[in-house]
Length: 261
Image (cartoon, rainbow, N blue to C red):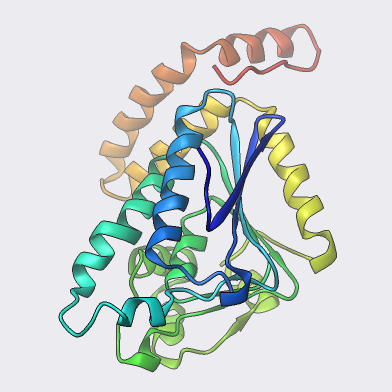
C-alpha cells in the first residue's frame, strides 16, 4: 500500500512508520491520521513484522492537530466526531496491536501527538525532544487518550499540571517523570531505536504481545480478575513454539532462536 503523508518501510522484521509532513512539523490532518492507522493495521496483519518504530521526519515528532486543516471545515464541525472517526481509531489500533511499538521521539510531541506518542510501548527520546499539552491554549481539554494514558505514567498531579499550564516538558524532565524510557543524543536516536527494535523483533514477540494484553486488561479489574486473566493468557503463551524453544535453549545452555510464533 502506498502512502502520501507517512513513510512506511519494513526491514528485518521491523516496520518503521515516519510521520512525513515536515513543512507542517508533521501536524496531523485527516489523511495522515488515516494513513498512520492503516500502517499500524498493515503491521498487525503482516506476520513477518514483529516490531514497529514510530517517529517523525525533520525537527518534530508532531506538533499535533493541523488546526488550519480542521478549521477549513467550518463552524458546524463536531470535535467529538472528529476524535471518534480519527484519533480514536488510531489509538485503538496501536493499543490493540500485540507487537511492541517503539516511539522514537525526535522532537516536539504536542497536543494530539502527545497522546499518539504515549500509546507507543517504549519511548526513546532525543535529548532535543519535548512534550506539550497545548489544548488549554485554545480552550480545550486534552484528548487523544491523554486523560487515560498520561496520569497512569506520571501521576494525576503532574498530568493535570501539564494540561493546565501547557508548559513544554523537555526530555530530561520527561525521563525523570517516567514519561519516557530513555533519552539519547539526537544524532544517535535512529541508531538506538533500530537496535532496540532489532532486539525485540528477534525475541519471543508473541509473549511480548500477550504481556501487553495482560497489562492493559489489568487496569480494568481487581487483583483476582488480573490473576485469572494471567492464567488464561499464560496458557496461550505456553502453547507457542517460542515457549518450547526457550525452555529447550535454557536446558541445553544455548541461545534461543525465537520465531514469533
